[in-house]
Structure formats: C-alpha cells, structure tokens
Length: 486
Image (cartoon, helix red, strand yellow):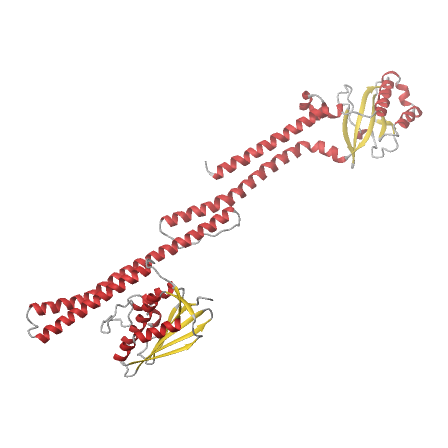
C-alpha cells in the first residue's frame, strides 16, 4: 500500500470517526433534553412542545385556557385580563387575546405585534401549541390555545415571551449548520490530506528520480532540500551521499587515468634502457666489440643502463607504497640545523667532485627540534639536489640551503643557479613522471618520480612543498616541517 493511499485512508477514518462522534454527541444531547429516545426523529416538531415554562406562565395559561372553555365572556373583560397580565410582570412574558380577525387584548410592551395577521395561524386541533415566531427584528416563543367563541368566531390565547434571536436563528438554521460543518470537515480533510501527502510524496518522488539517475550512472544533478523536517534532512543526507559518491567516482576515474599514464610512462622509461642493453648485447654477440676497449665500453653501458632500470624500479616501488600509505614512518624530534649541516658534510666529497659550491644560511635559534623521519627526509633532500644537478649547466654551480622560522613551522629552502623552469611547467613538476621536455628525452637521466616522492614524504610529515623559479637564474624548492614543541 502506497504512502499516499495510507494517508488518505487515515484521514478518511479520522473524518468518519469525527462525524460519528459529533452525531453521537448530538443524539445524547437531544436525549438528555427530551428524555425520550423516540422523540429524536421529531426533534424540530416537538422541541418547543416539551420545553418547560415557568409556574407563573403555566398558571396564567391554564386559567385562561379554562376561561376559554367555560367562561368565554370573561375573555372579553379587559379588567379581568389586566389581572392576568399583572401576574406575568415578574416574568418576561406578555398576554395576547385574539377574536376573529382582530386583537381584543394585547400587553402594551408588545409594540411589534400590530395586527392578528402577525400572530400564528388558527389551529383548532391544537397540535402545535408551542413554537417561535419573529416580528421584525425580535424573536418570541409562545404557548397558545385555539378555540371557538360561543358565536362561532375563532379565538386564541397567547402567552408570549421574548427570546434570544440567536437561539431562534440557530434552530432555524440548524440543518444548514450541520451540513456546512460536515462539508467543512470533508474539505479540511481533503486539503490536509493533499498538503501533507504533497509534502511527503513529492520529496520522496524526487529522491526516487535521483536514485534512478544514480542507477544509470548520472551524478551531475543536485537534490534540493525544500524543508528542514525529517524529509528535508533525508534529502540533505542524500545530497551529501551523492556528492561523496561523485567525488569517489571522479577520484576513481582519476586513479584509473593515472594508472594508465603510469603504465605508459613505465613502459616508455623501461623500453629505452632495455633497447640499449639489447643493442649492446647483440653487438657483443656479433663481434662488434672486437677489442678490449670496445668490450669494456659496451659492458659499462650495459651496467649503467641496468643501474638506471634498477633505480627506476626502486623509485616506482617507493612511490607506490607512499601513494597507498603502506610505508612505515619513524618520526622523532631532531635538531634540524644540525641535521642539514651533517647532510651537507656527508655529501661534501660529491659536491667537490662536481665543482659545486654549497652555502647554508640559518635564521632560527640553534637546537630547534622538528618532527621528522630521518631516512625519509634524507630522501627528500637527495631527490631535490639530484633534480637541481641535472639542470645546472653553468660553470659556477651553487646550491644554497636556507632555514627560517614561519609561524609554527620551520621552512627549508634549497636554491640553485641552474637554468630555471618554464612558468607553464612549474605547477606540474611535483607530478609523477612529469618532465618539462615534451619529447620526454632521457638525456638528463632520472625516473621522473624524484619530486613526486619528495611531495609524498613531506605530506606525510604534515608539511607543504612548493617551488619558485626564474628562467636563466635558477630554481628554489621550499618545504615546511612542524616544530616539536609548538
């Protein structure tokens, strides 16, 4: 059963129960008033016939009724009638006597009754002896007795009491009021059912359409929460799920694209040394290396190419483990100034051999401790320096180390005076296998993973790495490390 149908049935049941209870209460009220359950179907006909009157009104009415039956001549005596009228002064009632087509006696207060035509019609059977009547803007209830005078002229006795116009109006309009009430209940039920089901079913229908779009692989849409209730919260949760699913799929597609690019790059970088090795091996087999000098040259080249392949595989393996976060880091607090100076001293022979001048500038207090993994940070420094050396073609080669404080971090800069990097290529130098040379020549050597590995390691340290460069003047690589005590 659908939610719409269930809500319609629930509102219908509410309406039926409400109307049923309303009718039951009305019947009980009528029964309480009349005291006779059989009189309910004749309520409007006999309500006033059962309505009690005061003792004074009852006594006056019975006395006049007796005179109408036994001593009709006294009904023509106005002095006698005034005595009866005096008895009604203490109650809000008045006396009217009709004979024929004229009123022979009327209490002075009844100014709204002007002629016999204003009085209820003659009824010799006296079935409807009690009822209400309106005169202009006034409403009256009355008890009457119709009879014939001795001269066979019609006569009537009325004891009339002024009543609330609202009560009389309610009596006359009671069926209409009941009908209007039932119509209002039905209309209210319908409107509420429409509004509530619309506020529930419409968002659910939108979520259904969104689910179908996701099922078909379309995530380029937005689920809007139109309210802040439970349905709105569900819509917001659904939109958050869609966004995360889209991000996950986009990331998966990016990984797939990167995987394809990685395979292509690995194939290219491995094919070059393998081709060279095969060529030199075939030269040896064919006797091209027919002298000890040529044989030594061929074997040296084969060894160098194999070493390049081994280095590429090591870099690729390390990058993959870093990318998958499957490599263990051993963090500790170290003196960063002492660490960098020790690193420079460790590579001093290599720098001297390549005629490279090394400078170190420190703008922090000594014994500053930072959180690092010694071996991984050394790999970062080596990769950055190797990348600088590949592009340093000047006679005077300079590498500068700088250590400065940046808020809660230590910032380390490694600057060279090499050829510099094209501004268009600068944002991509930390991408794996990226080389500024579009032809991807390997004259300078390297795997294309050095700076990408450095970026992964610095990210694991909670720092950032970036570059600044100027063509012909050199390149600076910056990275940050966290203080141990800040």
